[in-house]
Length: 195
Image (cartoon, rainbow, N blue to C red; front, side, top):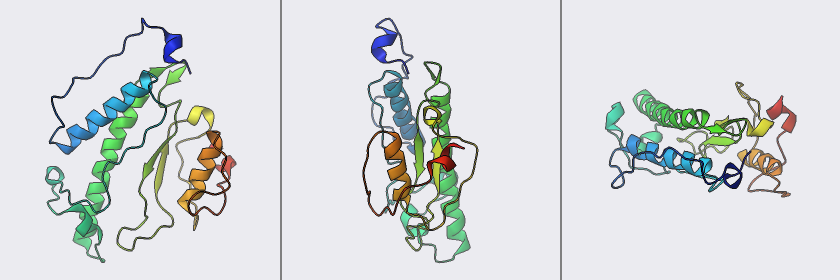
């Protein structure tokens, strides 16, 4: 990966339109945040980002997709099909926002590939089932090639494995060695992630 210094001061970056304030529209705000992250990666200002797109306990409504109920209360659906459908609609909408981010990363050249080729992205939640607050079998999307570490286009399912095991494994790949992280019970088999 070529650093900003190696690219030289003559490199120009295409800047997005600058907003005048925090956008009121959720989608517009998310896109501004994603565009800023792409720009920061492209300029080699940072190599790490963490972004909370929607917080737990959120009272946000999503009238733009036909969900006028507050997110958190309907996430405790108690088997009610109508609430389950609304939560699924919100989750799909959030994934649409994440897909926008991935497309921007994929379209941004970086050395011998794209930004997406040279990074590891993790998207997900802190619990698997919002109704029961189940912390196991949490669905996570891993994106990017991790500079060759990750192989994409697959669905891998780990049963009864704490998410912290994946975190611990990823930290190893980034050169951060720890014996334990959170509720980890070990590491995920690296060969499974890179096959």
